[in-house]
Structures are given as C-alpha cells and as structure tokens.
Length: 490
Image 1 (cartoon, rainbow, N blue to C red):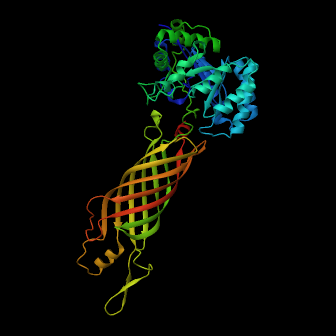
Image 2 (image 1 turned 180 degrees about the horizontal axis):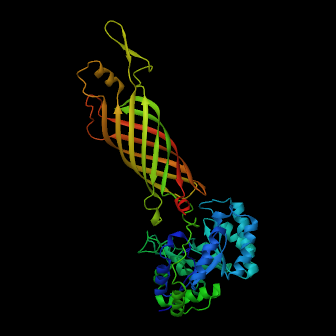
Image 3 (image 1 turned 30 degrees about the vertical axis):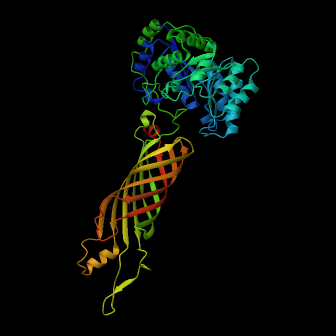
C-alpha cells in the first residue's frame, strides 16, 4: 500500500480524548505515515505538543488562527518562535484571514498574519494558511510578503479558479479536504487545474468529513477518501494520487519517509500506559462556541385575533429553551426550540380593567377578570450561518394553547347556564422567523434574539360559542445563554 500524509488535522481536541489510540491505529491501517497537527492559539500548544510526543507520525505546527487574533498579545506571538524551534515544529500555522465569521477585527487579523508570515520566513518553515472569504486581502498580503523565501500552503482550498491562478503564481501549495466529496461539485474544475507538484490532501479533522461518513466525526484515516476523490476528478489512479501528494507533502514540510510498521511497533510499546486525556478546548473552525443547550427569558407583545376581529392585545413574558441535538455531529444549524409564554390581557371590548357589570338594580358587581393566554411552543429552527455574529433563522412547529376568557368566567360565575366553560385547551400550528446575535465569551455565548411568532388553533375549538378561527401574533425579544459545557465540565 502506498503511503498518505494528512497535512492538516486537529486531533488534539477533546473529541478525540477517549479513543485517540484507535484513531491513530486506523490511520496507520490506511497507510497514513504522517499527520500534521496545527495548533491555533497558545492554550492549544501544550496538547498538540504532548500528542506529538506520544505518536511519532504526529507533526506539529504552531500558529494563531484569525479567530483568535484579537485574543493574543504581541508577546504571546513572539513566544511562538522559540517554542516552535525547540519542539521541532514543521510549520507556522494555522494562520490567515477569516472574513466569514470576523471574530477578530480585520486590522488585527492583518497584523497577526503579517507577523507570523515574517516568522515563518525567519525560521525557514512553511506557513499553513486559512482563508475564508478573504481572497483579495489575503493574496495581497502574501504578495507583499513574498520575497522568494516564503513557502505556504492554502489549506482546505475552497476558492475559485481565478484565486487558484493567483495563488499558484505566488508559489502556493494547494490542499484539499473532504468538502470536494460533497455533491455540489463547485471545486471539481479547481481540483483538476492544480499542477501535480502543487497538490496535497488533508482531513481538517474533526470537521469536513468526506462522503460516505459525512455528519460523523472526521479523522486522519479518511484522508484516503479525499485521495480517491482527487483521483476520480483528475482521471487517474488512486496510487498515482497517493504517491504525488505524499511526495509533495514530504518536500513541503521536509518530512523523512516513515516506516509505518516499525513506528507502529515502537509507538505501541511507548503508549502501553493509559493515554493522557487531551483537554477539550475551543477549536478553530467551524465550532468556536458551544451551542448544545441554551436557556433564557423572553418578552412578547401579543395580539389575539378571532376571525377578522382583534380580540385583545398585551405584553407577556416567558422562558425559552433551545437544544442543538446534532451538534456532536457538527450540525449546529438545526435546533429544537421550546418556549412558554403567559399573557394577561383585557379584552378590547372592555375599556378598563375596573369596568363592572351592573345587575338589574344598578348595583355594581365584581370586576370582570382579564383573559389569560398561555402557550407552549415546540418548534424546529433552521439557522443560516449559525456561527456568524449575526444569524437569521426560521422555525416551524406546534403550539399548545391554554386560554381562559374572563367574560365567560364572569358570566358562568353569575349564573349563565348557556356557557359550559371559560377555559380552552387546544393544539395548533406555529411558525416564526427572526434574527439572533452570537456574543461569544470564554464561559459561553449570549444570544440576544428577536423573532415574529404566529400560531393558530387547528381543528374544532373547544369553546364552540366562540369564532372558529383563533390565532396569535407575537413579536418576541429574548436573551438566550449557551454555557460552554466543554469548558465547564473540564
């Protein structure tokens, strides 16, 4: 079997803590001779270096991802150089620009990127570069820093043919990951255009898992699936792709050819003791925060409509719970929302809360109770770009209505025998659309959220004397808090 090299893989993160030995063994079984592991901020350096100390095939790169450019000081950046030199880092990375999320101001991203490109040149190490929706600025900075000594890899290449041509002119190595196996085919022609001596492959584990494992955790063994897709798109054999990408990676990272069997035997003996847990940390992309469970409160301006008549309006309050059940599979655009609201309103047919019905003698009776409207909503939410600072979403689901009508209660309490009940319990359908902000902090994410929610009773109404149609319109505002469970449980 010809060997493979995974040129970009974040297997030091907590999702590999429980089975890292098995992950490495599966990679060896697929012929993976080396795994380049780029750490992306100072808090990750220790875990990545510890992993390299346990497994000979793991090679470390050190850098600052653009997501974290605003979190590090210049002194912390300067400390990377001696650390990389002292521990045999094979690259400076992951570094670059990211305008998709923009967690760090662009100006600071540029400063950190330039500083680390200069470091790579000083150390005669290649740079592993992240680029997302920042093509023009990234290539401009690379061109300005390219003095003939800069070696760089555009990892997880996802841009178009024009960007590819410009990058190749600047001397780039181009690396592809599992996204080329997805059905859209946007990168097919790009994969075919890369020269044989410039192409490399990677997994970017635990993300961007290739077909047929998409939706599951990615791992280095799956780099063989990326190689197979490259072979298919370029009209060549898998052996040819294995050989040329491995040769390119060895040359670029200056890796000696590995003897997998001997290394495996040595590593097995060295790692006979239970593995040291890898700390769960915030990773580079695409999950910069934990959205597994969120809880918060809400305010709702509620309008209740029967038929074509606005029956009542009022301000209510409630609680909001949201769960992202598929986040462990890197699917965080799909959420389950559960919201409870309670609104006390005076029907529009009554002028004031203190209005009284008078009996035949003109005596004042008790005030008419207000209407009480309580709803329990269970909706599925789909969010566009869930990890951006500003996100838009739509929801569909069901609502349980619990209505109590004050005028009915009053009449029943005072002897009206034509009415049976003033309480109503019914199910209906509901939907909403809205906007949310993601304000990320070390302990979790605050998400101020605004939505317009509408819901209508379905089927026959329990209170048959009322109009059949009944629905509620609620502009809502709320603040959800998503605790960083991985950090809290660490």
